[in-house]
Amino acid sequence: MELPISLNKFEKEQRVIELHKEGKTLKEIAKEVHMSFRDISKITKEYDKKTRLQTKKEGQENNQPKTKKISLSSRVFKLFSDGKSSTEVVIELDIPPEKVEKLWSQFLRLGRMGECYEFYQECQYDIPTFLSINNFIKRNNISGNNIANVLRQTKDVINLNKTLSNLKNEIEKLKQMKNNYSLNQNNNYKQLLPLGLPKYYYEYLL
Image (cartoon, rainbow, N blue to C red):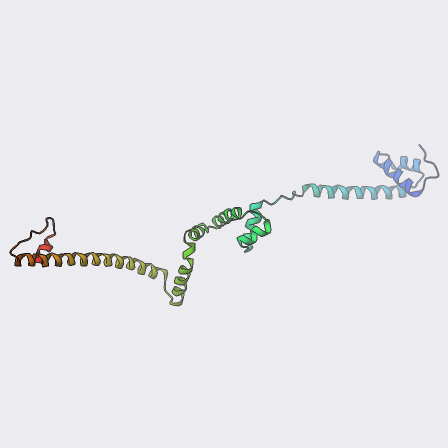
C-alpha cells in the first residue's frame, strides 16, 4: 500500500516505525513510504534504542524491593536508640504511655539490660541513696568487693547486737531473781528456782 504524497515528515516516521514493528524489511518499507534506506535505517535504529532503554528501566523498577512499612515497635526502638525518652516517644508517635512502657521493657531486654529495668522498678525510690553510695565509692576509690564485705560485716554486727541485747535482758532477770532470793532468805523463806534453767544460771546465783 502506497502512502499519500501529502504525508509530512513526522507522519512518515510514524509509519516507518509501524511497519518496522510489523516486521517489514527495508525494501518493503521504502517502497511504501518513498524514503531512502539510510533514512529508514536511522529511524528504526533510534526506535530500537529507545525501546531497549525503556525495557531496561522497567526491569530495574520491577526488581527493586518494595518499600516495607515500618512497624510501630521498630519506630519506637529507633527513637529509643536515638536517645529519646519515653515521654518524647509518647508525644512524637502519639501512642499510649502504657504501650511505650511495655516496648521500653522489651527494648532493654533486647539490649540485655532487662535486669537494670527490673532493678529500677523494684528500687526506683531508693535510687538517690544508691547514687550517693556510688559517689562515695568513686571519691574514695573503694571497690565493690570492699563494700560487699562491709555489708556482710554490718549484718554480723546487727546479729551480735541483738544477741548482746538478749543476754543483757537475761542478766537483768537473773539479777532480779537473785535479789528476790536474798530477800526470801532474810525472811526465812526459801524460794524455789524455776525448772529448766541453763546450768550457768545456777552458777551465777551461787
